[in-house]
Length: 170
Image 1 (cartoon, one colour):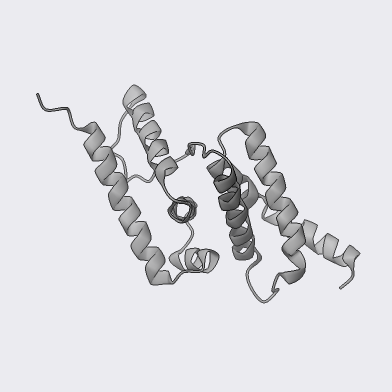
Image 2: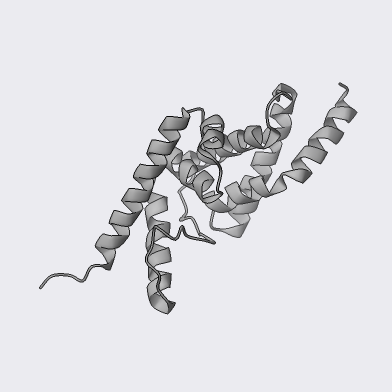
């Protein structure tokens, strides 16, 4: 396939799945300028890697894998930023309003910030409602391992937030 054909195919595929780049950049960078830089780095790496993309496999899975690798590498090179969340799994945090909800979201951001790159990627993919099969393909771990790790992360979230919600004993 010629370079012009590759370029057209690449643009069509990236256009169809551009939300992946934005979600990963948003999950790994809070500052809008840094987020934009990371998105550009991801796109550049996708283009450099595109000749090695196996068309027998899902493009979105491949794209997530490249994007997460770039984001994790970028994270190691820069000071990590808290991850802002648009939604929170219902079972992770008890319902609350106003300041309590803002505090819980902030605590969840802090928790995610404290995660190592693999667990952060797992949580991002889980919050994106990816199946364990997809998570395992993207991260190169077994489906059972993905399921176990996500379950442990959900338990840790419950424990962290429950501890922070309990009133201090006098």
